[in-house]
Image (cartoon, rainbow, N blue to C red; front, side, top):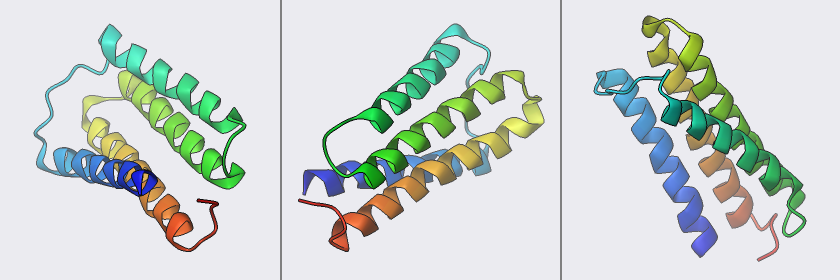
Amino acid sequence: MLRLVNEAVFLLLGALFIWLAITGHYMFDPRSPSWLAMAGVLIVYGLVTMRWRGGERTVARIRGGALILVGLLMLSSAYASWASVTRILIAAGATLAARGVIVIALILGGKVAR
């Protein structure tokens, strides 16, 4: 049950990213040290998650791959033009939402050991 809630949070976080990008209600500096540090933390944590020994390998790869991709998108937003940051945020939100949907489907479909 907790795993479903965890993935539902990522689904909602992805939807929030998409909504913020579409409405333009984001106020951040993608070149700030905190933004770049968070991107680095997401990439490293994604690598750790992919290498995690416990649990289902497919789910670990999906979770880790999504975090790595979002971290790379956050890094790319630091070097992109301001006009393309909206598309990058939409891509990051879609990645997080897809991660939530895919892992929830795997858990509910019985493909993952409980």
